[in-house]
Length: 419
Image (cartoon, rainbow, N blue to C red; front, side):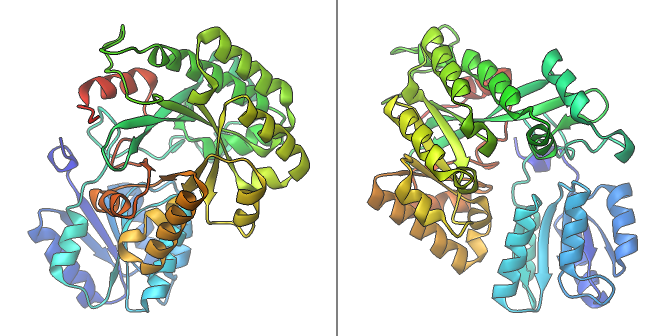
Protein backbone atom coordinates (compact mmCIF):
# COMPACT_ATOMS: atom_id res chain seq x y z
CA UNK A 1 0.00 0.00 0.00
CA UNK A 2 1.38 3.42 -0.90
CA UNK A 3 1.17 6.36 1.41
CA UNK A 4 -1.03 8.27 -1.02
CA UNK A 5 -3.89 5.90 -0.21
CA UNK A 6 -3.83 6.66 3.51
CA UNK A 7 -2.39 10.17 3.87
CA UNK A 8 -3.91 13.46 2.74
CA UNK A 9 -0.81 15.24 1.52
CA UNK A 10 -0.41 18.87 2.55
CA UNK A 11 2.25 21.19 1.15
CA UNK A 12 3.45 24.27 3.03
CA UNK A 13 5.52 26.75 1.00
CA UNK A 14 7.92 29.33 2.45
CA UNK A 15 9.20 31.70 -0.23
CA UNK A 16 9.64 35.47 -0.40
CA UNK A 17 8.45 35.56 -4.04
CA UNK A 18 4.61 35.53 -4.17
CA UNK A 19 4.63 34.50 -7.84
CA UNK A 20 6.72 31.42 -7.05
CA UNK A 21 4.52 30.63 -4.08
CA UNK A 22 1.29 30.88 -6.06
CA UNK A 23 2.77 28.83 -8.90
CA UNK A 24 3.79 26.04 -6.52
CA UNK A 25 0.34 26.10 -4.92
CA UNK A 26 -1.28 25.68 -8.33
CA UNK A 27 0.98 22.79 -9.30
CA UNK A 28 0.37 21.09 -5.95
CA UNK A 29 -3.37 21.57 -6.25
CA UNK A 30 -3.45 19.97 -9.69
CA UNK A 31 -1.46 17.05 -8.24
CA UNK A 32 -4.13 16.52 -5.58
CA UNK A 33 -2.43 18.16 -2.59
CA UNK A 34 -3.74 20.77 -0.22
CA UNK A 35 -1.33 23.69 -0.28
CA UNK A 36 -0.63 26.86 1.71
CA UNK A 37 1.86 29.63 1.07
CA UNK A 38 3.53 32.26 3.22
CA UNK A 39 6.46 34.63 2.88
CA UNK A 40 6.93 35.13 6.62
CA UNK A 41 8.88 32.69 8.85
CA UNK A 42 6.80 33.45 11.97
CA UNK A 43 3.59 32.52 10.16
CA UNK A 44 5.35 29.53 8.59
CA UNK A 45 6.27 28.00 11.96
CA UNK A 46 2.77 28.67 13.32
CA UNK A 47 1.26 26.78 10.38
CA UNK A 48 3.81 23.95 10.80
CA UNK A 49 2.56 23.43 14.35
CA UNK A 50 -1.15 23.84 13.64
CA UNK A 51 -1.55 22.30 10.18
CA UNK A 52 1.08 19.52 10.36
CA UNK A 53 2.08 19.54 6.67
CA UNK A 54 3.33 16.33 5.09
CA UNK A 55 5.55 18.31 2.67
CA UNK A 56 7.45 21.58 2.96
CA UNK A 57 8.98 23.63 0.12
CA UNK A 58 11.62 25.93 1.56
CA UNK A 59 13.40 28.78 -0.21
CA UNK A 60 17.02 29.22 0.88
CA UNK A 61 17.45 32.97 0.35
CA UNK A 62 14.91 35.15 2.19
CA UNK A 63 15.21 38.57 3.85
CA UNK A 64 13.66 37.83 7.27
CA UNK A 65 15.26 34.45 8.04
CA UNK A 66 17.51 32.48 5.73
CA UNK A 67 16.91 28.86 4.81
CA UNK A 68 19.73 27.52 7.00
CA UNK A 69 18.13 29.08 10.07
CA UNK A 70 14.77 27.59 9.08
CA UNK A 71 16.39 24.15 8.66
CA UNK A 72 17.95 24.39 12.12
CA UNK A 73 14.64 25.43 13.69
CA UNK A 74 12.72 22.64 11.95
CA UNK A 75 15.26 20.12 13.23
CA UNK A 76 14.90 21.40 16.81
CA UNK A 77 11.12 20.99 16.48
CA UNK A 78 11.55 17.38 15.34
CA UNK A 79 9.84 18.06 12.01
CA UNK A 80 9.21 14.88 9.97
CA UNK A 81 7.67 16.45 6.88
CA UNK A 82 9.17 15.66 3.48
CA UNK A 83 11.27 18.72 2.68
CA UNK A 84 12.07 20.21 -0.74
CA UNK A 85 14.73 22.93 -0.80
CA UNK A 86 14.35 25.54 -3.55
CA UNK A 87 16.58 28.38 -4.65
CA UNK A 88 18.13 30.21 -7.54
CA UNK A 89 21.63 29.86 -6.08
CA UNK A 90 24.18 27.56 -7.67
CA UNK A 91 23.98 23.78 -7.62
CA UNK A 92 26.83 23.41 -5.12
CA UNK A 93 25.04 25.61 -2.56
CA UNK A 94 21.79 23.71 -3.09
CA UNK A 95 23.59 20.40 -2.64
CA UNK A 96 25.27 21.65 0.53
CA UNK A 97 21.90 22.77 1.91
CA UNK A 98 20.44 19.35 1.12
CA UNK A 99 23.27 17.62 2.99
CA UNK A 100 22.86 20.05 5.89
CA UNK A 101 19.15 19.23 6.19
CA UNK A 102 19.86 15.49 6.09
CA UNK A 103 22.60 15.77 8.71
CA UNK A 104 20.16 17.62 10.97
CA UNK A 105 17.90 14.56 10.74
CA UNK A 106 15.31 16.14 8.45
CA UNK A 107 13.51 14.15 5.76
CA UNK A 108 15.00 15.89 2.72
CA UNK A 109 13.49 14.43 -0.47
CA UNK A 110 15.05 16.72 -3.06
CA UNK A 111 16.40 20.10 -4.10
CA UNK A 112 14.71 22.21 -6.75
CA UNK A 113 16.77 24.75 -8.70
CA UNK A 114 14.87 27.81 -9.91
CA UNK A 115 13.49 28.06 -12.51
CA UNK A 116 11.96 24.59 -12.15
CA UNK A 117 9.52 22.64 -14.27
CA UNK A 118 6.04 21.68 -13.04
CA UNK A 119 6.87 18.05 -13.84
CA UNK A 120 9.87 18.03 -11.49
CA UNK A 121 7.87 19.52 -8.61
CA UNK A 122 5.03 17.04 -9.17
CA UNK A 123 7.54 14.18 -9.17
CA UNK A 124 8.84 15.21 -5.76
CA UNK A 125 5.39 15.82 -4.31
CA UNK A 126 4.04 12.46 -5.47
CA UNK A 127 7.06 10.33 -4.65
CA UNK A 128 6.57 7.62 -2.05
CA UNK A 129 6.29 9.16 1.41
CA UNK A 130 7.28 6.54 4.01
CA UNK A 131 5.12 5.80 7.03
CA UNK A 132 5.68 3.49 9.95
CA UNK A 133 4.56 -0.14 9.54
CA UNK A 134 0.87 -0.43 10.26
CA UNK A 135 0.46 3.34 10.53
CA UNK A 136 -1.86 5.52 8.50
CA UNK A 137 0.01 8.75 9.10
CA UNK A 138 3.57 10.06 9.04
CA UNK A 139 5.67 9.08 12.02
CA UNK A 140 5.45 11.61 14.82
CA UNK A 141 8.64 13.28 15.92
CA UNK A 142 10.31 11.31 18.72
CA UNK A 143 9.41 12.76 22.07
CA UNK A 144 7.24 15.45 20.48
CA UNK A 145 4.64 15.08 23.25
CA UNK A 146 7.08 16.18 25.96
CA UNK A 147 6.95 19.67 27.33
CA UNK A 148 10.47 21.06 27.55
CA UNK A 149 10.23 21.11 31.36
CA UNK A 150 9.31 17.43 31.40
CA UNK A 151 12.12 16.09 29.25
CA UNK A 152 13.47 12.81 30.67
CA UNK A 153 16.57 13.02 32.87
CA UNK A 154 19.17 10.50 34.03
CA UNK A 155 16.97 9.08 36.79
CA UNK A 156 14.15 8.58 34.29
CA UNK A 157 16.58 6.68 32.10
CA UNK A 158 17.71 4.47 35.00
CA UNK A 159 14.08 3.66 35.75
CA UNK A 160 13.43 2.94 32.07
CA UNK A 161 16.27 0.41 32.05
CA UNK A 162 14.93 -1.24 35.20
CA UNK A 163 11.37 -1.40 33.87
CA UNK A 164 12.22 -2.57 30.37
CA UNK A 165 10.99 0.60 28.66
CA UNK A 166 14.12 0.67 26.44
CA UNK A 167 13.48 -1.78 23.62
CA UNK A 168 15.23 -2.79 20.40
CA UNK A 169 13.83 -1.92 17.00
CA UNK A 170 15.14 -3.63 13.87
CA UNK A 171 15.86 -2.06 10.49
CA UNK A 172 16.46 -4.52 7.63
CA UNK A 173 19.52 -4.49 5.41
CA UNK A 174 19.14 -6.07 1.98
CA UNK A 175 21.43 -7.16 -0.83
CA UNK A 176 21.35 -4.40 -3.44
CA UNK A 177 21.60 -6.78 -6.41
CA UNK A 178 18.78 -9.16 -5.41
CA UNK A 179 16.74 -7.64 -2.60
CA UNK A 180 17.48 -10.67 -0.39
CA UNK A 181 17.62 -10.06 3.34
CA UNK A 182 21.18 -9.61 4.63
CA UNK A 183 20.49 -8.67 8.23
CA UNK A 184 19.12 -6.15 10.71
CA UNK A 185 20.56 -3.15 12.49
CA UNK A 186 19.47 -2.89 16.13
CA UNK A 187 18.24 0.57 17.10
CA UNK A 188 17.20 1.42 20.66
CA UNK A 189 13.85 3.11 21.36
CA UNK A 190 12.49 4.43 24.65
CA UNK A 191 8.78 3.87 25.17
CA UNK A 192 8.02 6.81 27.43
CA UNK A 193 4.55 7.11 29.05
CA UNK A 194 4.32 10.88 28.38
CA UNK A 195 6.69 11.56 25.50
CA UNK A 196 5.84 8.56 23.36
CA UNK A 197 8.57 6.81 21.41
CA UNK A 198 11.89 8.59 22.01
CA UNK A 199 14.65 8.39 19.41
CA UNK A 200 18.17 7.41 20.61
CA UNK A 201 19.57 10.78 19.57
CA UNK A 202 17.69 12.12 22.56
CA UNK A 203 18.85 9.65 25.20
CA UNK A 204 22.20 8.19 24.07
CA UNK A 205 24.04 11.42 25.07
CA UNK A 206 22.17 11.29 28.39
CA UNK A 207 23.35 7.72 28.92
CA UNK A 208 26.94 8.58 27.99
CA UNK A 209 27.05 11.60 30.29
CA UNK A 210 25.71 9.68 33.29
CA UNK A 211 27.63 6.40 33.10
CA UNK A 212 24.66 4.43 31.78
CA UNK A 213 25.79 3.68 28.24
CA UNK A 214 27.26 0.25 29.02
CA UNK A 215 24.12 -0.85 30.85
CA UNK A 216 22.01 0.45 27.99
CA UNK A 217 24.12 -1.31 25.35
CA UNK A 218 24.03 -4.63 27.19
CA UNK A 219 20.29 -4.31 27.91
CA UNK A 220 19.41 -3.77 24.24
CA UNK A 221 21.89 -6.35 22.95
CA UNK A 222 20.54 -9.06 25.28
CA UNK A 223 16.99 -8.50 24.03
CA UNK A 224 18.14 -8.42 20.41
CA UNK A 225 20.11 -11.67 20.72
CA UNK A 226 17.13 -13.50 22.21
CA UNK A 227 15.01 -12.25 19.31
CA UNK A 228 17.69 -13.13 16.77
CA UNK A 229 18.64 -16.62 18.01
CA UNK A 230 15.64 -18.41 16.39
CA UNK A 231 16.60 -16.92 13.03
CA UNK A 232 20.07 -18.37 13.37
CA UNK A 233 18.54 -21.82 13.97
CA UNK A 234 16.84 -21.71 10.57
CA UNK A 235 17.55 -24.73 8.38
CA UNK A 236 16.57 -25.54 4.82
CA UNK A 237 12.88 -24.97 4.34
CA UNK A 238 11.36 -23.00 7.20
CA UNK A 239 11.90 -22.79 10.91
CA UNK A 240 9.35 -22.82 13.69
CA UNK A 241 8.18 -19.28 12.95
CA UNK A 242 7.78 -19.90 9.24
CA UNK A 243 10.61 -17.68 8.02
CA UNK A 244 12.25 -18.95 4.83
CA UNK A 245 15.86 -19.96 5.26
CA UNK A 246 18.47 -17.62 3.91
CA UNK A 247 21.29 -18.64 1.59
CA UNK A 248 24.99 -18.39 2.41
CA UNK A 249 26.17 -17.42 5.87
CA UNK A 250 22.71 -16.22 6.88
CA UNK A 251 21.40 -12.97 8.20
CA UNK A 252 23.49 -10.79 10.50
CA UNK A 253 22.63 -8.59 13.45
CA UNK A 254 24.37 -5.21 13.77
CA UNK A 255 24.74 -3.46 17.15
CA UNK A 256 25.91 0.13 17.58
CA UNK A 257 28.77 0.72 20.01
CA UNK A 258 29.59 3.97 21.82
CA UNK A 259 33.14 5.25 22.18
CA UNK A 260 32.83 4.89 25.95
CA UNK A 261 31.93 1.21 25.64
CA UNK A 262 35.16 0.35 23.83
CA UNK A 263 37.06 0.40 27.14
CA UNK A 264 34.73 -2.16 28.75
CA UNK A 265 36.15 -5.55 27.76
CA UNK A 266 33.85 -7.29 30.26
CA UNK A 267 30.81 -6.13 28.27
CA UNK A 268 32.07 -7.74 25.08
CA UNK A 269 32.94 -10.91 26.97
CA UNK A 270 29.36 -11.02 28.27
CA UNK A 271 28.02 -10.57 24.73
CA UNK A 272 30.32 -13.38 23.55
CA UNK A 273 29.05 -15.66 26.34
CA UNK A 274 25.44 -14.84 25.50
CA UNK A 275 26.07 -15.74 21.87
CA UNK A 276 27.43 -19.12 22.99
CA UNK A 277 24.47 -19.80 25.27
CA UNK A 278 21.95 -18.89 22.58
CA UNK A 279 23.73 -20.64 19.72
CA UNK A 280 24.47 -17.45 17.78
CA UNK A 281 27.75 -17.76 15.89
CA UNK A 282 30.02 -14.72 16.30
CA UNK A 283 30.03 -14.35 12.51
CA UNK A 284 26.34 -13.42 12.75
CA UNK A 285 27.02 -10.36 14.94
CA UNK A 286 28.49 -7.07 13.75
CA UNK A 287 29.55 -4.15 15.93
CA UNK A 288 29.12 -0.74 14.32
CA UNK A 289 31.18 2.22 15.48
CA UNK A 290 31.97 5.61 14.07
CA UNK A 291 35.55 6.57 13.37
CA UNK A 292 35.43 9.16 16.17
CA UNK A 293 34.64 6.32 18.60
CA UNK A 294 37.86 4.56 17.74
CA UNK A 295 39.94 7.74 17.95
CA UNK A 296 39.46 8.37 21.68
CA UNK A 297 42.09 5.76 22.61
CA UNK A 298 43.53 4.36 19.35
CA UNK A 299 45.78 1.75 20.98
CA UNK A 300 43.07 0.34 23.24
CA UNK A 301 40.65 0.35 20.31
CA UNK A 302 43.10 -1.58 18.17
CA UNK A 303 43.60 -4.17 20.93
CA UNK A 304 39.90 -4.74 21.56
CA UNK A 305 38.73 -4.63 17.95
CA UNK A 306 41.45 -7.02 16.83
CA UNK A 307 40.40 -9.49 19.54
CA UNK A 308 36.77 -9.22 18.46
CA UNK A 309 37.68 -9.96 14.85
CA UNK A 310 39.83 -12.91 15.96
CA UNK A 311 36.77 -14.28 17.79
CA UNK A 312 34.77 -14.08 14.57
CA UNK A 313 32.70 -10.93 15.15
CA UNK A 314 32.36 -8.42 12.33
CA UNK A 315 33.17 -4.71 12.59
CA UNK A 316 31.56 -1.94 10.57
CA UNK A 317 32.95 1.57 10.23
CA UNK A 318 29.82 3.72 10.42
CA UNK A 319 29.22 7.12 8.78
CA UNK A 320 32.22 6.59 6.51
CA UNK A 321 33.29 9.64 4.54
CA UNK A 322 32.32 12.30 7.09
CA UNK A 323 35.56 12.55 9.10
CA UNK A 324 39.07 13.66 8.33
CA UNK A 325 40.62 10.46 9.61
CA UNK A 326 38.39 7.94 7.84
CA UNK A 327 41.19 6.61 5.63
CA UNK A 328 43.61 6.33 8.56
CA UNK A 329 41.07 4.40 10.62
CA UNK A 330 40.23 2.15 7.71
CA UNK A 331 43.86 1.10 7.32
CA UNK A 332 44.79 0.67 10.98
CA UNK A 333 41.68 -1.06 12.35
CA UNK A 334 40.36 -4.50 11.28
CA UNK A 335 36.99 -3.51 9.83
CA UNK A 336 35.01 -5.87 7.62
CA UNK A 337 32.34 -3.41 6.43
CA UNK A 338 32.00 0.24 5.42
CA UNK A 339 28.74 2.10 5.93
CA UNK A 340 28.38 5.05 3.57
CA UNK A 341 27.07 8.05 5.47
CA UNK A 342 23.44 8.79 4.67
CA UNK A 343 24.18 12.45 3.90
CA UNK A 344 25.77 11.28 0.63
CA UNK A 345 23.22 8.59 -0.15
CA UNK A 346 20.15 10.75 0.48
CA UNK A 347 21.41 13.49 -1.85
CA UNK A 348 22.90 11.23 -4.53
CA UNK A 349 20.06 11.65 -7.01
CA UNK A 350 20.44 15.41 -7.24
CA UNK A 351 24.13 15.89 -6.43
CA UNK A 352 26.95 14.83 -8.73
CA UNK A 353 29.37 15.32 -5.84
CA UNK A 354 27.42 12.92 -3.61
CA UNK A 355 27.29 10.33 -6.41
CA UNK A 356 31.05 10.67 -6.89
CA UNK A 357 31.76 10.17 -3.18
CA UNK A 358 29.36 7.22 -2.96
CA UNK A 359 30.91 5.55 -5.99
CA UNK A 360 34.42 6.17 -4.62
CA UNK A 361 33.58 4.53 -1.28
CA UNK A 362 32.06 1.50 -3.02
CA UNK A 363 35.15 1.12 -5.21
CA UNK A 364 37.43 1.58 -2.20
CA UNK A 365 35.58 -1.05 -0.21
CA UNK A 366 35.71 -3.52 -3.08
CA UNK A 367 39.45 -2.99 -3.53
CA UNK A 368 40.02 -3.67 0.19
CA UNK A 369 37.73 -6.69 0.33
CA UNK A 370 35.15 -4.93 2.52
CA UNK A 371 31.38 -5.01 2.20
CA UNK A 372 29.74 -1.64 1.60
CA UNK A 373 26.37 -0.68 3.05
CA UNK A 374 24.48 2.44 2.00
CA UNK A 375 22.35 4.05 4.70
CA UNK A 376 19.48 6.45 4.05
CA UNK A 377 18.09 4.70 0.94
CA UNK A 378 14.73 6.41 0.68
CA UNK A 379 13.54 5.78 -2.87
CA UNK A 380 13.85 3.19 -5.62
CA UNK A 381 15.94 5.50 -7.81
CA UNK A 382 18.76 5.60 -5.24
CA UNK A 383 18.53 1.82 -4.84
CA UNK A 384 18.85 1.39 -8.62
CA UNK A 385 21.92 3.64 -8.63
CA UNK A 386 23.52 1.62 -5.84
CA UNK A 387 22.88 -1.57 -7.80
CA UNK A 388 24.51 -0.03 -10.87
CA UNK A 389 27.73 0.91 -9.04
CA UNK A 390 28.01 -2.45 -7.27
CA UNK A 391 27.17 -1.48 -3.68
CA UNK A 392 26.66 -4.60 -1.58
CA UNK A 393 23.93 -3.75 0.93
CA UNK A 394 21.30 -1.08 1.49
CA UNK A 395 19.06 0.07 4.30
CA UNK A 396 16.57 2.89 4.56
CA UNK A 397 12.92 3.84 4.39
CA UNK A 398 12.61 2.62 0.79
CA UNK A 399 13.15 -0.87 2.21
CA UNK A 400 11.64 -0.57 5.68
CA UNK A 401 11.63 1.66 8.73
CA UNK A 402 12.95 0.37 12.06
CA UNK A 403 10.33 -2.00 13.52
CA UNK A 404 9.59 -3.78 16.80
CA UNK A 405 10.60 -7.43 16.80
CA UNK A 406 7.12 -8.86 16.18
CA UNK A 407 6.52 -6.47 13.29
CA UNK A 408 9.93 -7.34 11.81
CA UNK A 409 9.06 -11.06 11.87
CA UNK A 410 5.75 -10.40 10.09
CA UNK A 411 7.60 -8.25 7.57
CA UNK A 412 9.97 -11.16 6.86
CA UNK A 413 7.12 -13.64 6.51
CA UNK A 414 5.21 -11.44 4.08
CA UNK A 415 8.14 -10.58 1.84
CA UNK A 416 8.97 -12.86 -1.07
CA UNK A 417 12.71 -13.26 -0.74
CA UNK A 418 14.80 -13.54 -3.89
CA UNK A 419 17.62 -16.06 -3.66
